[in-house]
Amino acid sequence: MFSTGIAAGLVLFLVTGAPVVANAARASGGWGGADLSVRLTAAPRVAQPGQWLSYEVRVRNAGPGDAVLPVLTIRVPDEVEITAVNVASCRSGRSRNEVVCPSPVDIRAGGSGAVTILGVVRTGAKGPLRASAVLSSEVVDENEADNRAEATTRVDEGADLAVRLSPARHTARPGGRFTVRAAVRNKGPRRVPDARVYFTEHGARFLSAKGGRCSARHGKVGCALRPIGSGAGGTLSLVFQVPRDGAGEVAATVYSARLGDRRPGNNRARMRVSPGRG
Image (cartoon, rainbow, N blue to C red; front, side, top):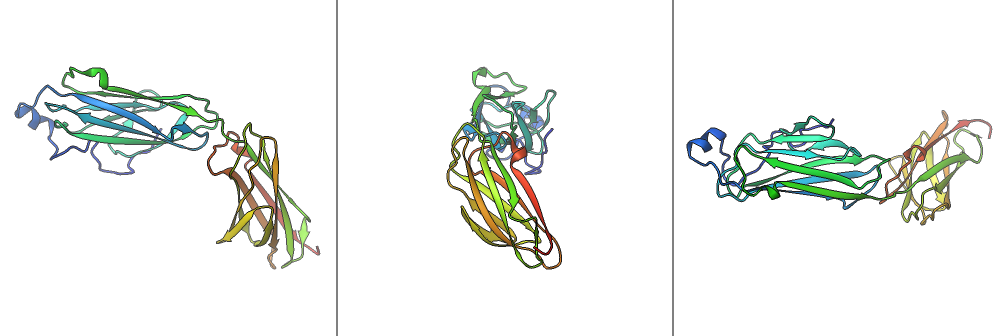
């Protein structure tokens, strides 16, 4: 369900002072009087379909006693695919998208710690996304009202960008030039102010471009388009050079720098130009 170990070896709670194992706490009489609290936040505040969403859970023991072997249970919405948890001791829970983080040590009074869950919002997510965190301990907490926290995140409508590639000619002389036309369409309900087209060259060499601000680096070309309104489009015209010893191929991906995309299947296109007499 999710992968752990981004920070392998971390203890669930990083407490002030040296960690106290359960037996030592009991031997010293550090029972009772713990006041645990949990806080849950999501970032960004407005989620984008197909993009990252993180949950940070912060735990604190206000004391005056130690919290004995606390367990943190986090439930992430089904619309979010969990990709990583930054605490190695966390594991999958009984239900889908449930993360259980048992602490191997007691938490002293004044101790605190945090767990971060990273996920990707599914492209079909509608929202609002509701996550929860519950903290429990072997010691009775007289103030259980703050042992549970929730976070609600709105999901943006996102964008629906599509790209199509078409050549001026289907063949080109070896070593000669050929022009690729990239037609971008905004099929979504809102204006996209920051559309980008990312080209990958396979054998072909980029020479020039019109219709956008483009730059090439390490065999890849990135182009920024003007804002595209809902239902409108934009066009890029790029000139490449065919290799002398084979066919040239160009692949393109369109995306918004800030908005997610609900239909990523039409974000990519590929075109091949075969060598010929031109």
